[in-house]
Length: 138
Image 1 (cartoon, rainbow, N blue to C red):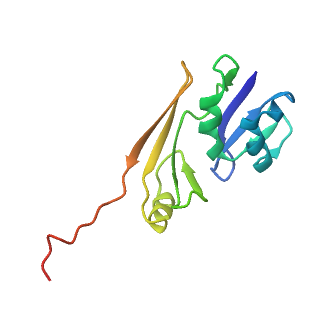
Image 2: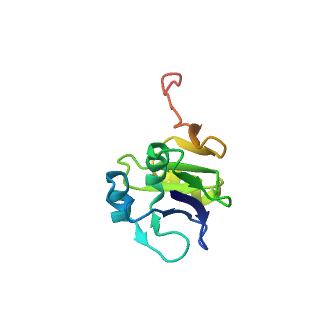
């Protein structure tokens, strides 16, 4: 059984917590996530970067997966051009949109988790603006 939880910490950052058995730690799906994450104490074994959430959630057997009752079910995300930095928030705020403009306005996606059938839907919320100068005279 694999337990998953998304929660906010004291700095309002979204944290992806994962509880897996030691047998599953050698699975290639989890190996990279565990290397980049950190081991924690408590109900969950690992705190993993949020960019691994969607691939892990989509590739686990739904019978083995358990989503925590208090988990966040929807968040916004975008990344820079090279997918090196990811920016996540539960709500749009001034600082989030400032980062969006600094990263040349990529598409912002809303990731929504369906709690009943464990599916993920990823929709574009803000599109990159298209600016055309063909209509203007100089």
